[in-house]
Structures are given as structure tokens and as C-alpha cells.
Image (tube, rainbow, N blue to C red; front, side, top):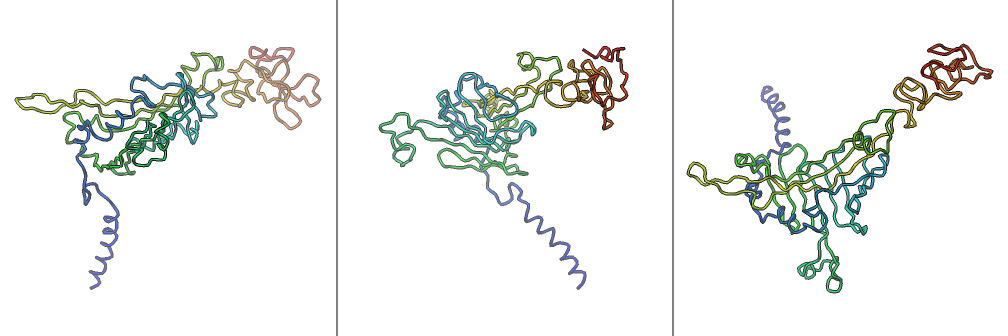
Length: 353
């Protein structure tokens, strides 16, 4: 009897763990993702077609822009007019980010769309489009004045979600319908290239690199070489991407072209301030933005030093607290001076000014 009790005690935790794990395909019903990607009338494809030219035009090469400063990454000013407004603002110390939320304003500062992204297969896109007769008949409050105001618009949203640790994909359409897929099933049509058409978002970012001391932070070449960036693109299946071809006397389907890749923003981030001009003691500096072998600027009276050459025309000596400081010649606290290339007048050697 005791043996059976022990066996039951050992099996119970395993049953509990098994019950807590949801495996795609076990008790779940999935639609065929290959058919969905091949359907030019699918809600995902239709969303892109219906909202085209409303906020992110299909003929727009790239909505590129620039942040005013790297310390406050909240508004990217687009080169062609308009803004990308991030809420919450991006944190340069947490790059690369794994999630973003933003809205796009047109040149008249009117919101025309927004995106929320938390993962490659988890995001939602909303675009403001003109109200239709169906919207008015449905009583949409945004379209209450559509009969007299031709500029009335309503938001259309497509949303995708993949729970963490799972391969399922849920698509919520702008028309209120929804779809449930197992992304692993896409391997069934990978041989004809349809796996390349699956919806996904690609977020890329870099904080940039610190320029050398002699670099001009405002110079175009400095910004280009050392500046950072963040950009987002989303993949949409194209109509007619899958075609029928004859292969070994059989008619098979093949993907003739890749997905439509829509870039939602590409924002430049100003580079960090160069060493010796960033208001910090870093690198080989002996004090903030002075001294050492890299900075041209020598340190002033009272600033830390290591050798006479770190100071601007004065010796580096122990102060009353026992710390090496640049000290004017008439300083009453001047102690023993250091070497390091100092000339006979204490003005410093090759490193001095």
C-alpha cells in the first residue's frame, strides 16, 4: 500500500505540469496559415490595400527623420514634414529597445496613424481612413458629421499577437473577425517559399558610438559615422505573390516575389558628445574634459591632475588634503610638484599649453 501512495505522490506533480503546458495542436483548432498567406483577400492583405496612401504611402521610400537630441528621444522630425511621436519616449540607455509605441502626425500636426509593438509577431497598426457609408449606418461616433464634413475619418486596426513561449499567431482584423494559426504549420508551404510571406515586424536600433576628441559633433560626417538610429518595418504579403508553375508535368505553386516591406520610420539619433567635450570625467582625463593624453585642453587651478603637463601653465602638486591638484604658483597650499615632462618654469612639457 505504501508503494502505491509514493507512486501517486510522484506522479501528481508531473500531471500538474503537463496540464499547465499548452502545446499547439493539443485541443486547439487552427486555420491553415498557408491558405491565409495565399489569399489576396485576407484581412491582413486587405488592410494594407485599404489604408494605402492614408498615412504610410506605398510609394514613400522611407519616412526618415531626426531626433533633436539623444537625451530626449520623444519626437522624430520627419524630413518631408510631420513627426513620429513616441509615447513613452525611448531610453537611449536601454538600447536596443524590444518594444515601441508611437503615432504619426502629418505636416499639419494631425494624427493619421499609430503603432504599438511588443515583439516580432505581436503588434497592432491603426490608420485613420475616410468614413464610409457603412460606418455612418453603423453609428460610428467618429463619422457622425460625415454627411457635412468630408474630412471625417475613422481608425482601422489590424492586430497580431503571439504569446511568449508559444508558436501560435492570433490575427484580429479591422472588420472585427479574427484568425487563429499555428506558425509551425508554415513549414508545410516553405518548399514553395510562402514562409517568407508571413506577417512580422522588424525593429532595428543602435545608440551610436562616441566620436574621437577632435570630431565636430555637428559635422555631417560625424553624425553619419557615429550617430545612432532606430527604424521599424512591417512585412505584408503581396497580391499575386504566389503563382502556379509547371514542374515535372505537375502544376505547383511558387512564390514569385517577396513580401511588401513597409518602413514606418527611420529616425537618426545624434551621436554622443566626443570625449573631452561631454561634461564628464572619462577616458584618460584627469578631471572633467581636461588633462590626460587625449584632451587638448589643460586643467585649471583646483582641478585634478597627475603630472604638471595636465595643468594649464601651473604645477600639479599635493593640496592640503593630500590630493594632486593644479595649483597657481602663488597658492599657499602648494606642496610637492610632480614631474611628467614639466619644464623649468613648471608650465608642463609636451602636454601643456
